[in-house]
Image 1 (cartoon, rainbow, N blue to C red):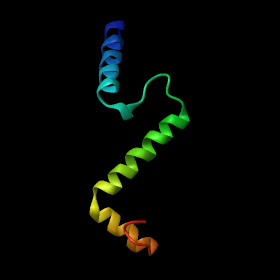
Image 2: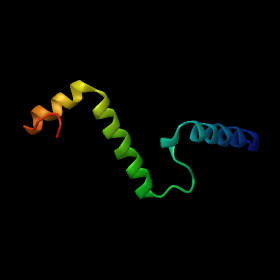
Image 3: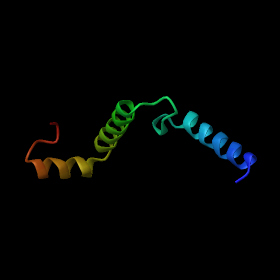
Length: 65
């Protein structure tokens, strides 16, 4: 691997990290990364009604909980 390849890969990674907040960055610690994953997961669950219905049935709770 040449230096130009490494630079190109790093620049692509920086571009993705700037574009998508959840991809992290070099200064991100484990806790912040885990919080991002958890937040994104909950947002996905709320945004997809069938998943919410499945969780409600599996946990014997109302969908609102």
